[in-house]
Image (cartoon, rainbow, N blue to C red; front, top):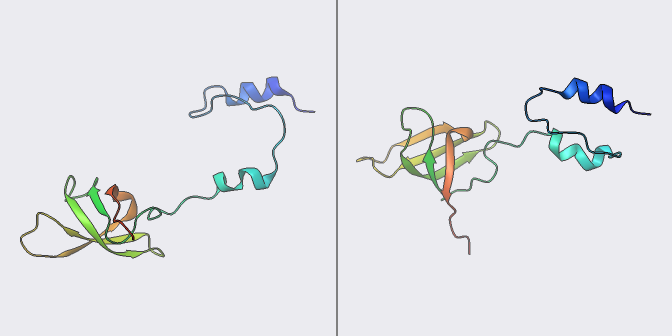
Length: 102
């Protein structure tokens, strides 16, 4: 039997905790919440991204290559005079537009 009053006192003041859900849940139901998502998930080759961190912050670029093992992407900046590939961590970009894959 759960002591909900004790649990409520433990979670009081914890960031991002809003309350307790009554009932039980199996591990299979919540397992996907426990595994971190890859930083490059949702990014595809040809997508247009905005760089949100680093020296090129605010620049727009097109994704050329994705290295899922290292969670890095290689992009080509739109505003650059010469096409130079820039490699960034996946969490340093935000997808603006997906390439249409027909």
